[in-house]
Image (cartoon, rainbow, N blue to C red; front, side, top):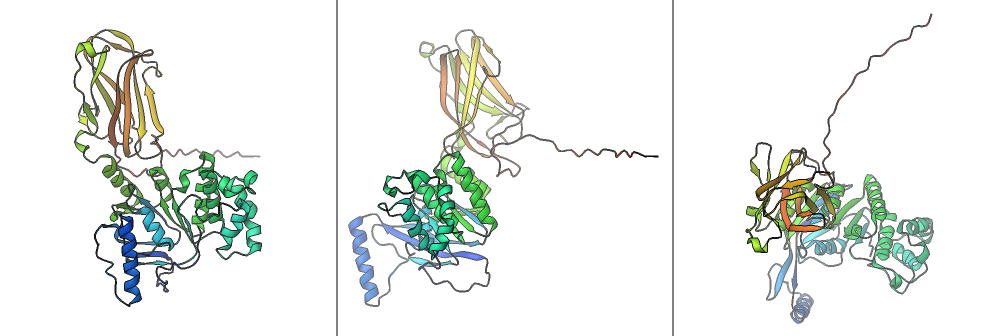
Length: 435
């Protein structure tokens, strides 16, 4: 769905700062979980307004809860703001209030300029109409003339990659096709403000790259973005500032990197901080062992001190303590690392066998060490699967060893840390003298 102009939340007045496109002041929104009770409250509120009474919007009634509570922020022209938080934090509710789909119970929202919300997959499309007809209907809502739509039509279809299905009803589209078409319509009207709710999570890598490139061009022209995504890398790469919401409350606002780290710590480390970065497993009876058992896992620095959090760009050693009941000449230790925030993709997959380093294990207590001269992982929370085997025979597996990586430098735009050195080499200029 695409709308233009001022949201009906509040008529925008001329700001002393023309660069402010969105101003949210003390916005709160409450809902009722019980449908019958919610309908009753709705009728009660309408009746109160009809008789000229005043609603107690700042007070919760039985069964109600705050979906948003006292949220404040501003967005200026060309800025990109990320919204992060767990499911139910209030992110989508906030976008709907900004877009004018629902009204806040308290506070005000001022929006200046053309607004294009991409809040749901295919929202605003008539499923019976074809893709062609929906493009004209959708973009005409913005006040574009038929001539302007015709001029942009081919670009929209090419961007959405749906040329073969453009004359088919939208109800036959996949969710990805509908999302691509909605995104293409929104960005090609070049709005002043673009609201994006998880739309960048659809499509293949090629389409995602195309979306990011288009957003970068729009931002250069002054378009402001509000992006909701559970993919931390997307928020880090697009947004310079972010808000962290939890249960409707604004927990932290500021630079995206610090907001993301706080969000990840709260989301993934709640109740586990004391054991993060180290693990001790109970020893198995010999009769239950398959030959080698993992007893403990931890990190240590170059001085042999146990550390709970590796640092990006610094050396670190992963230590896996084992108990062997027999001699193994070609043991293979494997580590599969995934980021907890993201799309569950593999970040690292390291094995001693792939490095041509067969491990000789003698009976007794042994510690297998893997030293990394530089920790290439960027700051974040990770989980790793660690196993020890010989050939196809597995001895022991740890399904989830969680740890956090921190950094003393700003590398928020990177997907991994690249060790490097910088030099400037001066070359003498040799002059050729001609007689």
